[in-house]
Image (cartoon, rainbow, N blue to C red):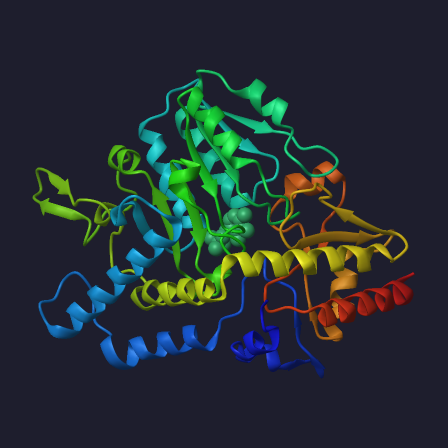
Amino acid sequence: MLDIQKIRADFPILSQTVNGKPLVYFDNGATSQKPQVVIDAEVKYYQEINANIHRGVHTLSQLATDAYEVSRGKVKEHINAKHAHEVLFTSGTTHGINLVSNGFTAILKPGDEVIVSSLEHHSNIVPWQMLCEKTGAILKVIPINENGELIIEEFDKLLSDKTKVVTVNHISNALGIINPIKYIIDRAHAVGAAVLIDGAQAVPHLKPDVQELDCDFYAFSGHKMCGPTGTGILYGKEEWLNKLPPYQGGGEMIKEVTFEKTTYADLPHKFEAGTPNIAGGIVLGTAVDYLNNIGFENIQAYEHELLEYATKRLSEIEGLRIYGTGKNKASVISFNIDGIHPYDVGSIIDKLGIAVRTGHHCAQPIMNFFCIPGTIRASFSFYNTKEEIDLMVDAVKKAQTMLS
Ligand SMILES: *Cc1c(COP(=O)(O)O)cnc(C)c1O
């Protein structure tokens, strides 16, 4: 059992008032809050060891390099990668996906196919569209059903020997649906396609095992898992990372440069051109430690309780519809109230201190499927409480009365 009050005390921002009301932060799907240990680690880096990495012989440079590589090792252990050099530091999920899609420009031929799903965040749609435009490959889309679940029989039908890349999110940011990625990975591999999993919404809630999943790439952001903004990880299987060309050219990513020819550095440096977010990369390791100390089994069990409770409480409201009613869900609820624009509800409950996301959640195809402009999305973290859910339900009821 988690001691939620003790955990909440780790997050200074949670004790704030907003618009004169205690903050209820239910926008964890957009970014999570940061515990004091993460904030302290960022300060400590700049106060004590700030220096550029992988370059200097001097002591601080060594300390910073060591701390950066220790953090890479922590992430490697956390996601169970085979090698530390399969773990690339990025600026976030978007960066990781673009690194891979750009690399496939050198591999795809006209008529090859890339499969994405209707449940994707724009950052796992647009880079693949750009890739298809550049190469003449064709984008295929796995459809969803009324519950917001992927129609897996349709995915099976899309697969063929033309399929070169399959990419889906582990958990949908807009609806909270958990996708059957193991099945998707295995079926895609059976036709020889590479698979990228967008894990941005999964890593705050669970611990992915990339070897067990057998995915070729797994991308995520640090800021949604209690880490700093501008940090992220791209896991890639060694054989794929060796096959893909570098994403950016610059310092740090070369072995030897002459004007005739440049040879690239070994992994992971081949993909880490320029000075990275050193502090952020180091502190991401602190965030991973923090989450593991709480324990992902505890996090999942408690967040499931919050999801069930919120679903039950919100369902009491007449005219309220929840989108994403599939069985397998993370602690995210997307909903609307009959005849009321989601933005109006969001604005009123913000006045009552409640932070939710309203809009299309960077997933317009899902909104088009349901023929709505957007939803109100409440996304819960392990530091949220049932009392906060009660406050949100009361606020939504109030907004409904005011707006109808
Ligand atoms: C947030 C998110 C992204 C984009 O992450 P960034 O940190 O903005 O790069 C991609 N996919 C999903 C599912 C997300 O939730």
